[in-house]
Image 1 (cartoon, helix red, strand yellow):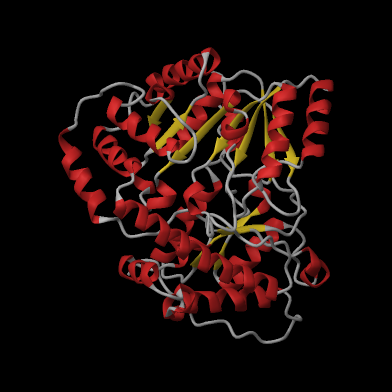
Image 2 (cartoon, one colour):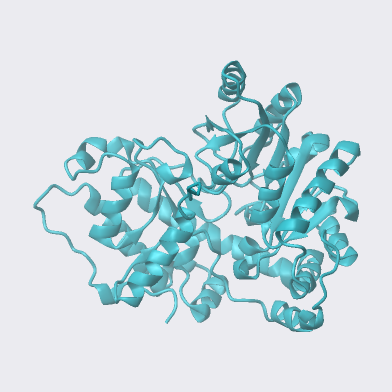
Length: 440
């Protein structure tokens, strides 16, 4: 019998389960390692879920005409005119991304660091992954010169890079690539005949849209760009698993869409009927959905900026967050002092925060970053508390000043400071019962 080799579970999901186990054992932890938007479910969404309960038939693999039309309208309102037949819906954007990996031949180019799912999906699809460093100012897409050089070297060594994955705004850095960068990367994609997958699940969480213009690769290179999105981040319904993909117009786009639908027919058959009911309503964006998106973007931005200030105050360098709910601090300026505590890489940095301060983060090495680097991702959306506290945070003028969020921020500040405190100096670790719980 041939032995089967299994890859480890997705590290963010594994850490989330670790937190649940340790909290069940009585440990008090500040959880920053899982990219879930902790928001109360809008009553109107729950109503639509109940209305859709009778939709028990399979239906079309790509999704019902009505839900695909709603998603097409969503893109059209963002300056991307779209026909419904170019839309496929699925149980979250993650399986749609996997289906694209299966449908497109060749290898994959990824920003470095990047969301921890892209590379394993490529590996499951039998592809090589070529990581490309991101610029100092933003993440989500590679540095242009490095991208050209990586393509050249990959082809010289037998690689066949054909797929470029971008994230706007970015997970893990919480930043948005500027329009000029999008133009430059798309020019390279056109010159090198790359298909672009633009993961735009955080598009509606740009903190200040007036100050931070958004340009999709589909605006610049529509004939070669697939856009993916979903409802988990903007509306806090990640567990409902609703995603959508927009495919290019023309014969090549139709062929790619058909290949993805074929994969979907073998992987998930169709998005569950009740979720299609929710998706049709949410992607149509009635006033209450628009209002919730604005309120949540404001909340995410306020708390992400608070954690960014803490990281910079502790001596790290960190890109200012402009979208999503992440910060990605770099403690390289403190390497000498961290070494005195046995912290020499992202793994030991994350382990120290967990064991010494009860702070759970996702080490950069798990995101394709250089293992020796002193970087990690912190998901700030996990600080909003239970459902009542989340609602309070959505309405607050100063969410970071609310007692339960301020208490968590204080623990984070003390934990970051403890990293470089001289050995032997006493700390002021917060008693376990003072750590705010996300659910009580």
